[in-house]
Length: 456
Image (cartoon, rainbow, N blue to C red):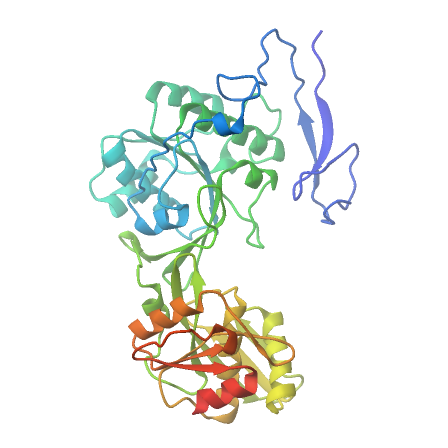
């Protein structure tokens, strides 16, 4: 007698299960994220279909397990390979997300075309666009299209798996996972049940056949991945493709990578011919070549390279009501903290002044290493004074006004010297032991010392 499907209620944020619906998840605290989920019954069989992958079914000594030679596949885009840790690992599953129109499909199409030219058959499964639409994009970004690149407009996972068994591609692309559905799951495409089932089939196919799979995913209004969070735990790599619509700079960042670091970023420029790599990211983000009022250069170390950018600040007297505080590219809470430290330790009153801080180029720093540069830019705009030379400021500002050390400061100094800057302001704990030719290194223990060094 066939068993009935079991119904559970699952939180789309954390994956916690409940026997009945409730408004708030008691585990993660999210509201209105619990949805109904039908679990298919497990059929009894003589051969256990739930065995782990591999020919061995008994415990083995970890030290005796041979390490396979995973030769990475180059995507043909060095910036994408950098983020992935040196290339695409066979059998890996990569989830890439981004806002609509940001350029995800364009980037994937370029990588697919270059992999097909060098490695063999590549299958591009499109659930959102027709063959003609994908062909028009490929003509624009690839020019000549390889005979090994196949397009398959399909949303049924069983048909896709059957096609993969017949074609045996060396690279598979699913665009997008929210449009796919499986006949084994009784729900509509894009639902929690379907996304879990389709992702599970793709993972099994990738691991069993050593075929790398790229999955394109939608994002919510808040910029997070749509669908259950458990998918992010299932895949090997999670990439985020971001950028401002009014700017052509695009940043690929890895939030999870089982085969490399999560600190790397890749830079591209969106053009009519597709994505163009930006190896010199610092040069594209720095707008001012000299020292201007309210403008200070800062840097963060991303993965294996330092990235320099310009932080601008504008301080004006507030006309009516409360003073405004606007931050673009840095945290709003971080800006409020820096303003409080400036008033307490630097002796400037900003209570009746509007303060605007912007990171030029649309870059979101996400690092505390830029605190000092933001504080100096605000002080420069408020006092109308600027540095007399090209200077870089790096350091974290504490609530006591003291500067805390930042990682990889020595490499930032080397890059600043190469780019032609005259001086670098660093926390005292970051002062290098050896001398640096062609650049002055100014140590500062607190914010007041940094302001004096900036104006010297």
